[in-house]
Image (cartoon, rainbow over all chains, first blue to last red; front, side, top):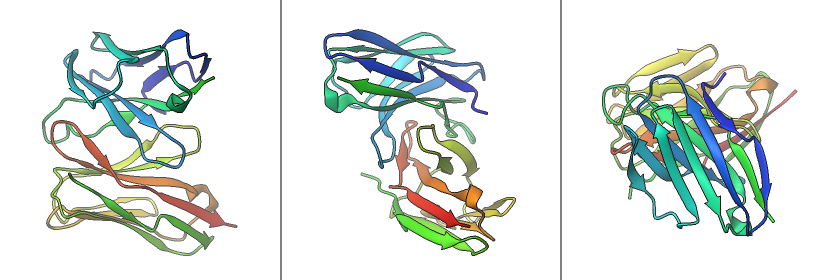
Length: 116
Length: 110
């Protein structure tokens, strides 16, 4: 069973709505990530947080706004999304950014987002 | 840009057969991970390989990391219908970026 928990599992939102995806891990990991996955494609990196600070933003549109309130939580705030933003959003974590085993990344089960 | 070429993209075989999935790159990776993903679920980690030439076994699955840490393979012996799924290789490319292969969609027919 995954130790990265994502809520909600499914979300349907209109283009004018504001919603948030939530992610939690209790493995003591200090790096957390958001990925986006479209059907039949591999996951694409969106954001990386290290020690609660944003370290990578892969040129993601500002309608996606990440937040890391503490080392266990990661949120993704959504506003004014487009239908093409519909996808599986995956949260992940790893022990640290560097180190012999620090690169192993564990994924949550994902949040299915549909924008109508 | 670091790329991982995964092959084959699709594979459909009969139960009991053996198969191998390949991930190849011209770049060196500090580690490489294999994941299995069911429809509508997140990728589940199968193994991480770190050392060039490393071989890891997980029941009927054998993972190998190339000596130069540029390629990897996944071999499944006596495939079962429960092995059906999307298999993803992903290489660690520094700064905590994972470079994913395009995935292999495996179907094991009873």
